[in-house]
Structure formats: structure tokens, C-alpha cells
Image 1 (cartoon, rainbow, N blue to C red):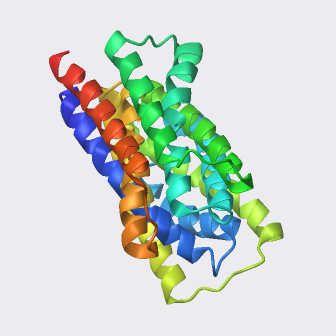
Image 2: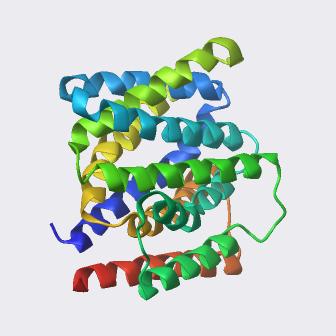
Length: 274
């Protein structure tokens, strides 16, 4: 598979993830974060059970820990900030991913990749509205660091292990890790039609489908490239937040969205030549 095709598939993953920000934001009016994540991931892990193999267990659980922290910080942070801000700040993993990949696995950046990271970071900064951080934004930043570890590890392990089983162990780990705090920190648990629909959408599309695609496609591309392309979830989160929640962007923020797209095009063009 050409890395360009892998990048195109990761773009679809970013679209799916971006679309779920307003969905989860509204669901949190009725259900607590840990409870939402526990139900979402435990339910989805059942779909992975036929594909789990012992060989991927260790790596899958390691990635699952990073994913659990990412989703936990993200879901709690979403209660305290806007869906648009959450999507954009989450995308700052574009900066953390190459640093972590270099430290853990010795992955090196080309000049085009380094330029793309800088352009994407400027874009994400402009998209943030250049405003002061609140508590929710700080939690989302911790989420971005956790997801950077996740992306770096997936790119490393998916090249050596079976991606479907690897994804399954990640999802199962997130579900189990979320269940314990859900037992003690659940203040809201209204399983109305909207919450059930949100769990179905995030479980099937944003978890089952997206995790399979991410683990499979990242075996064909570098973690820095994946981080840049997946950061487009911040742009897509705004598009859907405008449609669903009525949130808006300034002209400066639209410039930021353009820069993130430009960074993704730069790194994908390089991949097509390599």
C-alpha cells in the first residue's frame, strides 16, 4: 500500500473523530465521563473478542493505558470547555508525537516533515482563538500528550504485530480501566435515546471502525505523518460543532484551519514521492 493511500485513510479517521466531539459534548449533559467511556469501550471490545490473540496483548495494553488517559482527560475536559477548543487542543499532539517517537524509537524527521509540524502547530495555535487556557483546556492538553504516546506506539507495534488484534487489546484495556473509576465517580447516568445513540455512534464508528483503520494504516506510514493528518480532527470538529452546536470561528481561526490542511498536504505529497 502506498503511504499516500494510508494517509487518505487516516484522513477518514480524523473526520470520524472530529464528528464525535459535539456528539460527546451533548451526551455529557446526561452521563458522567467515566461511565460514558466505560460503556462505550466495553461494548465495543465485545466486537473485537473473536480477533484477540495473546501475542498482541502486552503491546495492546501499553497502548491502551495511553489511550485511556487520553480519552479520560478529553472527556472530562469536554465538560469544561467548548467542543471546538477540545478538538483543536487535542490536535497539538502533532508537536508531541515526533518528540516521543524520536525518544522511544529513534524515528527521525525529514526537513519537509519538520516544516509540516511547524506549519500545523501554527495552524492549531491560530485555531485555538489565541485565548487564555481554562481548566478544561489544560486537561485537553494532557489528553494530547497521551494521544501522542498512543500514535507513536501504534506506528511502532503495528508494523510487527497483527493490527486487528492490537486494536482489540487497546479497546478492551480502555474499557476495563474506565470501569473502575466509573463505579466511584458517576454522578449522572441517564441512558436516554440520545445517550444510547451517542454510544452507538462513538462505539461503532469512532472506536471499532476508526481503531481498525488507525492500527492497520499506521503500519504503512511514520508516526509524525499520522500525527499531522490525524490533527485534522480539530478542523472537522469545528465543522460539526458549527452544524450541531452553533459554534463559530473568526477569520484568524479559519486561517489556522487552512494551515493544518496545508501541513497535511505537504507531508502526504512527500510520502507519495518516497
